[in-house]
Image (cartoon, rainbow, N blue to C red; front, side, top):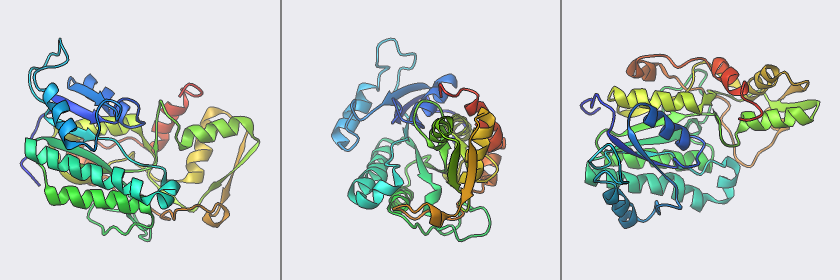
Length: 305
């Protein structure tokens, strides 16, 4: 654990901050906190070209674009880019490792060379799900899928490089405004059908992107570093999450529980990937709200979510 930084960055670059499910929300939360934030997509800068990325950082080193309130370099990179299509990762492992492992490693080198803080998001899928209790950040990973393995590789690469102020946040089961996600898809299907069948024997930590963004800002503000778990509090099965969303939306659709065997997938999912967030809550200064409360806020905006 490095010496606490105890302040927000002055200028942050959010990769995936233009149109990513998580990145755009994190960029918004940083701006609300007073951080000058540059949201970049792969169309604006080639993430995999170290020289182009360095040039991009240099272009924003003197308050660019014009009128910027901060005259200084980017001092924090937030990586919200990932290949998250878990089943497709099984057949496209090279692409999965390129985006989920090679890119974070490259960013780690850039951060180390320039003395930048780096925030990287990982996943609950680094665990095999055999533990009968919520996973601690110190528990031994054992991924069951290419997706989980590629994200674990990113953790190992970054922890090995150890750039200043490195913060790795394992999160899970993201839903939020702006893009397709599990909850939104369930609500769309429930509006069309009278019955849905959803897996009831896989448990995790549902997480609202806006809450995760707020948590990220709080952790940065308080100088948190290292490997932490970041999610809403509480736990649920996919069935519980889906059924609660449908109930909150007032849709006349029955949500029936089925076992994992009733919904075979290309990638193996952990039976239990609930994340223990006690350490994170202590470092952030508050306990993230329960996923049910977060879900109610999200569903209240449907169908415009």
